[in-house]
Each structure stands twice: as structure tokens, then as C-alpha cells.
Length: 464
Image 1 (tube, rainbow, N blue to C red):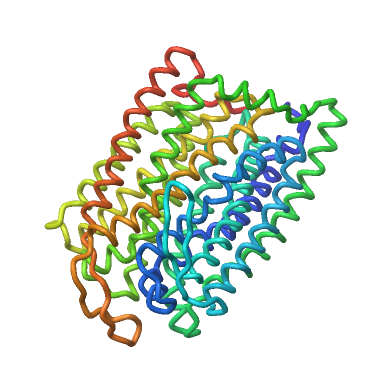
Image 2 (spheres, rainbow, N blue to C red):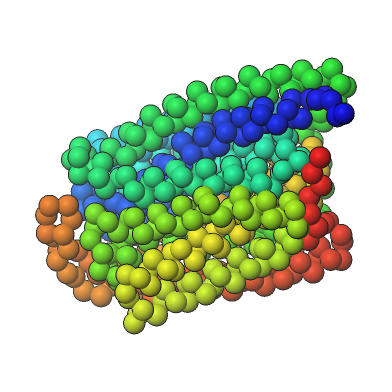
């Protein structure tokens, strides 16, 4: 009879650990998209343009990209461990959420200010700039926690149900995204405060901190076991970055990641207004349709993760998700496809793609890169991903203002009818479709590289 030699082998304990980490992920993800259903209301309340909104929502990746904060986060994670890095990440998120609340709640004026990033210049409202700074600070903590959570799950589930566990962790996090689609409009209607969802996110982050501290208790016990079993942990070395950078398959997954997520997360930021203007859905209910995307991922991601554990085919799964991504955005770009049933069907189909790719992508990184370098590897993937999360929303906002204005129309916002700018979303959808097409190319390339080098992406995970 097999004896339990580690907390990892105690099934109830490792699944409890996963539940605690995943609950914290849920609390973190809420603020990421909490203002997406409120784009038009936010523009009216703070006198923002689509460019202001695009700049604000793209600010998530500023510090991660330009200050290399994600790379430093990976170094901290591999040097200091999951517990320290996770708590630090939540504290940073709370600071960023506080700044964002201060700006959006009306404490910062809407006078114009110039922003010069060298390669791109904007004339923005001051409130959008300050809210962006808060969102950028939050982004540092959120991405830092994301890589910490991934490494925690790999640590507890490697050699067991790893892909399923990563899929479940991602899925529970998506509940936060779904809540961010469902709750902001009713919350604003109830409180008459455009910043109320940000305040709710602060409360959720405090809940997430408590859950993560409970996780830390179990992880500390696992540390003691590793010491007793003489399992040595190697400290981070700058040489690790060089070794990771040498791996071609790592870069193929990384580029696939940024292309895929650039066609999903920025789409979510603009999806509510797209649903209102193209499909004629009322402002109060439009956010419910993009909410189907993360809810679909909630159900399907662990299913596909379990499939990867048992059957393999990781690169093939990523290829299939990329094909669906391209198909969905091409159909969204067709002006005549404007019925509500089409919108619901396409969002649900996009949810399938949103489940397929992450369920295979994150476990595949753990197959390519040794565990001792995994925190740094995840941080490098997230850093490249943040270029897309930063630039694509800004690009879409600029394109909408510059090329896609289609006049004005009276739109009911809550209880008030207001004249708002109308946009033609065909060009933005074609931009997203281009990302999907490129994702397919890199998925093919990754599959070919795996066949050549034998990383085992197409093979099942070994489960004890």
C-alpha cells in the first residue's frame, strides 16, 4: 500500500490549497475588467473620449513593460518564494486600486494634459491619466500574483493532475471576469457612483489576502517537509534568463500567448459597447453577453486541462483554439451579422477558444522549462503578453476615434437618454482577426518544434 510521504500526496490538502489560490485569483481578476461594461458611462461622467478610455484600459501594462516589473517579479518569485511574492502582489494591487478609485470617483479634474511616450503622443484628460497610473500599479501586482499562482499550482500538482489544476485555477479566476461583466451596471445604478465597482474590488482584494494567508500556512508546512527530505531549492541566477532565452519553443509559446490574449482581453474591454451599438442591446444588459465568455471558460478550461493530462495533444489544442479565435472575429467583422443570437453564439464560441489555449499553454511551459526557472519563465511570458495588453487597447481606441466614427445617436444610459458617438467596429474586429491568424501560424510552428525536440507537448502528463 502506498503511504502518504508528503502533503502533495494528500489529495484533500492539495485541492484545498488550489481552492485558496484560485479564490484569490478570482478576487484579483474582478478589477481587471470592472470598468469594461461602463465605457460609455465613464466617458460621459468624466468627459472622456474613446482615446482616453483606450489609454486608461491599456495602462494595465505600462510598468510591467517599460519598467520591466514583470521580469523583476519573476526574479523575486524564484528568490523569495510564492508566499512572500503573493502577499507583496496583493498589497501592490490594493495600492493601485486605491489610486484608481481616487481618480474615477471625481477627485481628479478632467482638464487636458499631454502625454509623450516618444513613439506615441496623446492629449488626454487628467483623470484618465491618473486612473491609468492606478491601473498600471494594479497591473504590476496582478501579473505578479498570476505568475505566483501558476508556480504554486505547479509545485503542488507536478506529476499529478497538473493541467487540470491549472485549468481549474484559471477557470475560477474567470469568475472574477464574469462578475466584472454582470455587476458594475447594477451597482452603479444602485449607488449612483461610477467608481462603486472599484470600491467593491478593494473589498474583494482584502478577502483574497485572507485566503492567500491561509494558503501560506500549508505552503510553509510543505517547505518544512522539503527541508526534512533534503530537497534543495536553487536560488535565482541571472544566468537563468539566458538559459530560458535559448529555448526556441519557449519563445514560440510566448509569442502565441501575446497574439492570442491580444485578441481576447482587449476585445472584452470594448465588447459591451460593441454589443450595444452593433446588436442593439440595452446598456443595462449588454455586459451580460460578454460575461458568457469567461463563464464558458469556467466550465470548459478544466475539461480541456483534464484531456491534456490524460490524452496529451497540447500543441494541437492550442492550434484548435487559435483557429476558432480567427473564425469568431471574422464573423464579428461582418456588418450584416447583427442579430442578438449571432452575438451570443459567437461569444460562446470565443469562450471555447478561451478555454482551449490557456488549458494547454501554461502546463506546456512547465514541460519546456525546469521548475527552478519556472517563475522567471512565467514572468518573461507575462512581460511579452503585457505589451499586447498595453498597446492593443490603445490602438483600438485610437482607430475608433480616427477612422470608425459613424455619427451620433440617442442612447439610453440608465434612466437618461443621451446623445453618444456611434462607431463602426468592423476594422477593430479585423485587427483582432489578424492576431488570430498569426496565432495559428505560431501554433503550427510550436507543434513542429515539439516533434523535433521531444518536449512531450503532445504526450499525456504522468499522473501518480
